[in-house]
Structure formats: C-alpha cells, structure tokens
Length: 201
View: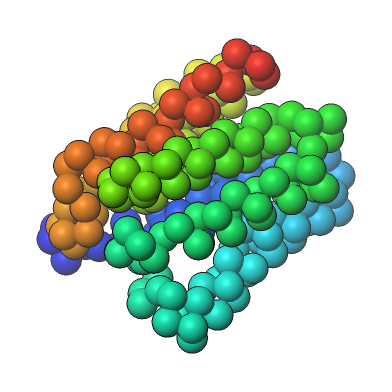
C-alpha cells in the first residue's frame, strides 16, 4: 500500500483538479451543450489551468525560483499561487463567465478564493496542502452538482470522500505535509465552495 499511495499525489495534483471538475460537469450536463462548445471550453480550461502554469513553472525553475513540481518550500509558493489567482480571474472574466456556465463559474470563483486563503496562510508561515485544497474543492463541487441536478450521486460522492483520505495519506506518506497542514488545505478548498452554494443552489 505504501508504494501505491504516492500515485494519488500525482493523479490528483492541483494542476489537474480544474480539468477533472470541468469534465465531470460536462458529462453531467452533456445534453445542454453542443459537442463543439464542450471541446472549446475544455481546450480553454486546459490551456489556462494546466499548460500555462506548467510553462510558467519551467520558467520559474530555470530562474531558480522553484526547485520541484511539488513546490515544497513556503517561500517558493507565493509567485505560483499569485499567478494562479490571475489565471483564474482571466478564466472567469473571459471564458467561464457567470452568464454562460454559472456552475463552473462559481467553482472557479471558489478556487480563486481558496488560492487567496492559501497565500494568506503563507504569510503566516503555514504551508496549506494544495493537494487537499484541490481534492476538497472538487468533492464539494460534486456534492453541489448532485444537489443541482437533484440526483443523489451517492457512490460518486462516497468515492471522492474516500479519495480525500487517500490523498491525505499520500501526502503524509511522502512526508510533504503535517496533519495540520492537510487540515488547513482541506478547509481552504472546502469553505469557499461551501459558502458559494448560497448563490447558485
């Protein structure tokens, strides 16, 4: 089991959470969009939330501002997280807008505030787990979508709740975080999503 746990850290890396959330949404609301629309939105999401951050990561790596994809050092996280905030704002202002796809808009808006919280904790010298932030935000988004479509996705929700445990165990196994940092990361991801339920559920 110890050899399997690290897989969850890579599979649910924060970079991929936006793609998972968007893909899950479009699968659930497949009938409400043309196939070309879905492709267009997914391409934009992948470019803004995955490809651009990876490109900027390698730029920061070449400049000596970060030393690994996991960005373990507190001091190295401020620039990538700030960039992530800017990219999320661009996404919600230019592509996934509130009038086009309100459900995804509020997910990304919640992700923006989750990132802001993570940055605030950095100034307090607390390294919130970004893996837990991501998987918690995704789990709460799926719970909200279940309520939105009025379909009890019990097995799906239960699976993602279980995945929270696997991701947390993975981070502990890799000695990347303490229990407190995992808890802070979970709260940073879950609370903004939960608070925004009021506006779209």
